[in-house]
Image (tube, rainbow, N blue to C red; front, side):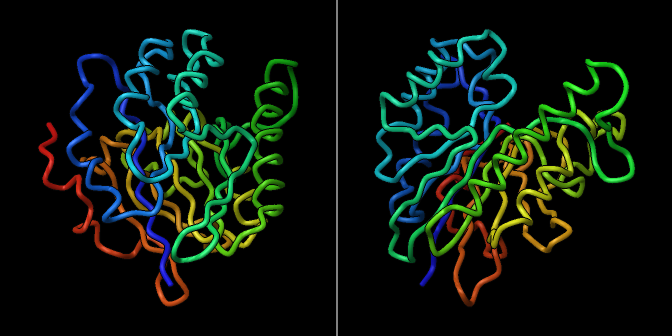
Length: 258
């Protein structure tokens, strides 16, 4: 049995973008069991922009599960943003999980925005000034919660959904100087603490698509500027490697992107 997962992030919707994704998204029920959104749904995190997201991604005929990104926090309207999404049935995760019944089995999704800090050998540490300790502690707290939720999911297959990257592999192409602001190895450790089949993230617009955690979990950067289509499609099953199927079946490929 196979679980089919569509995913995209960093769509940065506003009124002038509404409708661009929808023709491909309307094909989703024939190709995917669920759509995962990896944050940065809006440009500035306003309620009005969130309602644009709701119009674009609501009522698709498959469950839609999302985390927020840094852009979605910009205007300090997170409750309003979440409310607008939940009104149309989009599940918003933050240190929480959900389990979906699919034809291929019970899919568990643990989600968190994540945060920065860097990666092994070149990372910030919880030492020195209170501001630095708070920075690292933020990531540590989020990662600990993500790991706990992943381990506690009662499901057949686990997927981790974040905005920030859990590995440096998928940041290749971004300036090295900004890696600490694009993700953290602590997220990768959390993902490796459970029997996770696939990790999905966004955020790194100039990054690369594929990576692997130290524990061997496949990681995919689905930021729209990276995948350049409405969504990527992944098949998970006993006889398939996560993320290794072609996206040729994804309805978004025929959609033109600049």
